Structure formats: C-alpha cells, structure tokens
Image 1 (cartoon, rainbow, N blue to C red):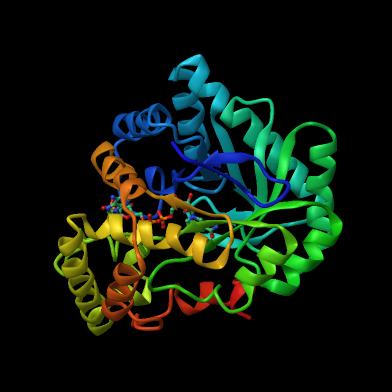
Image 2 (cartoon, rainbow, N blue to C red):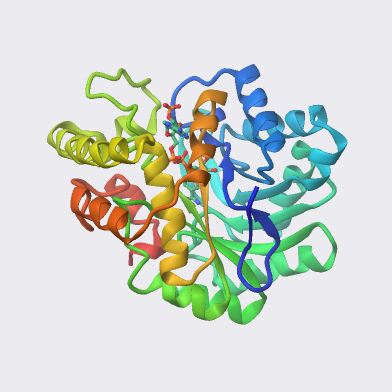
Length: 338
Ligand SMILES: NC(=O)c1ccc[n+]([C@@H]2O[C@H](COP(=O)([O-])OP(=O)(O)OC[C@H]3O[C@@H](n4cnc5c(N)ncnc54)[C@H](OP(=O)(O)O)[C@@H]3O)[C@@H](O)[C@H]2O)c1
C-alpha cells in the first residue's frame, strides 16, 4: 500500500482511508458482521486510516471500530490510526441539535471516545463543524491540551474555510483538513486547497463518490430508508438526480474505455488532484461491504495521464452537478461555504 504524510506535521497514512460512517448511520441499514469484515479486509489490504465520528449512530460507530480492532491481528491493530470527529449534538430521537466546541465539552467527548474505541489515544481529533459560539482558538487549544496529555496525537479540522484554517494553525500544528472533494464537489480548489498547502496541512477528502451518487451503482429507482441522508440531499432529488446520473453515464464511457469501473475512476481522479496541486490528498472511501472495498482499492492501480484527465473533464466538467451538496439547513453550518 502506498502511503502519504498528512501535511508537514501529521501521521503517515495509507493512500486510501476507510470512512466508517455508513456502517452506523445516514445510508440506511448496514450489516454489522459485514461492516467488521470490511474493516478487517481494509486493514489486511494495508489501509491504516479509519475515520469515524462519535455522533455516527450516537457511539455505535466507535463501538463497532473498537470491536473490529479487538478482533484484528496485533500487527494490524498497531498500524491502525483512528481519526475521530466530535462536537455534533444529537437527541434521543436521532435528531441533530447543534455543535459544542467548548474546551470542557471537547475533553468530555474525548473521554467517551477513548472508552468506546478501547484505545489509549486518538490519532487525529477534530470538531466536525465549527461551533460559531466558541472561538476556534479555544476548541483547538483544548485539543492541543489533549495532545500534551498524550490522549490525542494530531489535531485535524473539518469543513472549515481558509480563514478559520489559518486561525487554527496559529494555535497548534494541524495535520489535515477533512472536507468534501470529488469530481462534482470542487469548491476547495480556489482558496481552501492552496491555503492548506501553504500552511502544511493535508486533505482527507470525503464524499469522493458523492455518497454513492457517482459510484456507478446508484440507480434512479433505488428505494432509500426514511433516515437515509440521500433522501434529503438536493443532488438526489428529481431532475437534479436525472441530470447527475447523466453525468455518471458520461463518466462510465470514459471508465469503460480505461477498463475500470466508474467508482475507480472517480477515486483515482481525486488522488490525481493531489499531484496536480502538489498537496497531500487522501480519499476516505465510505465502503461498508467487502465487495465495495475491493472495488475502491482497485483505484490505487489506475493511472490517469493528461488525455485521460481531459476525457474525464469533458464528461464531468467543473460545476456540472445539479443541486448543492447538503440541504440548506446543513449548508448554513459549513464554514467552508461562507
Ligand atoms: N467531515 C465531514 O463532514 C464528513 C462528512 C461525511 C462523511 N465523512 C467521512 O468520510 C467518509 C466517506 O464519506 P461518504 O461515505 O459520504 O463517501 P463516499 O465514499 O462518497 O460514499 C460512500 C457510499 O458510496 C457507495 N459506494 C458504491 N460503490 C462504492 C465503492 N466501490 N466504494 C465505496 N463506496 C461505494 C456506498 O453506498 P451503498 O453502500 O449505499 O451502495 C457507500 O455507502 C465517511 O465514512 C465519514 O467517515 C466526513
């Protein structure tokens, strides 16, 4: 497995990370045994970076990862790195109740995460969304204290814009910014990506398949569970979905010409942007089944030359997607979009 270093101060990680969110939340039912088998298959394939959030299934995802780590070989467990998001508040009905980045809350969240994961430290710790009521310096300062105490190794950020990134980096070294980036979500290219590069901060890219929309497997007639994020996402609605799936069919032609799958070319495109921008970009793929993971791993063998990249650009030009990447209420929480 190829590796990347996250920014100038972050850990060395596998060139692909595994995002575990869908194993507990937001994409409908997941099979627990298959989820654990997928984590084990990822570790066996050399993936070292496991991404989670304490609010994914209200602790469910961390308990799942903890169980998978306990069942993994000692050497896989030793190499595994946990990237944990905190700060999103939930209610007993599964609703979302804002964000909390106060220093005392940060330490409280961390105490519970360490326990649920069954680890003695978290490798990268970050607030999921900026808490607008707490200066970012205070939130990052609290994580820096957790680093000092040995409970956390590195500080990350999530979905923040360039100004916030600068303020955070002035407090303590930031290893990576976790942010959505894909063929149809290129908003970071103008300002956020250059700023991260300038500050020596890596990118862990999520939604590289736009939550399955550009995976090549999503169909117009797919039935979604009531709590599936995609049932509310603008890109998955009506005419937007039709338009976006037309883009996927154009991409499929390019992928077929290359002898690879749509998901593989979409993941390989994100990795290729790391070279284009001279930045450390590590895609977090949201596979929750072993077959999907195997497909995603195949992207590591895809090399895209200038002609391939031009063909991809012609199929899915920048800004071609229909619909925002989040519903309006959630867009409002994205510091990266302000
Ligand atoms: N920082 C943040 O704000 C934030 C936000 C969201 C996610 N994340 C992190 O990023 C990770 C990845 O995000 P994501 O799940 O939205 O990304 P994604 O990789 O774009 O989408 C994952 C979905 O794509 C579908 N899929 C189809 N073929 C696949 C393949 N070969 N490999 C993987 N998935 C395939 C699967 O849906 P089906 O199984 O339904 O087919 C899967 O649930 C999450 O697990 C989470 O850790 C971070």
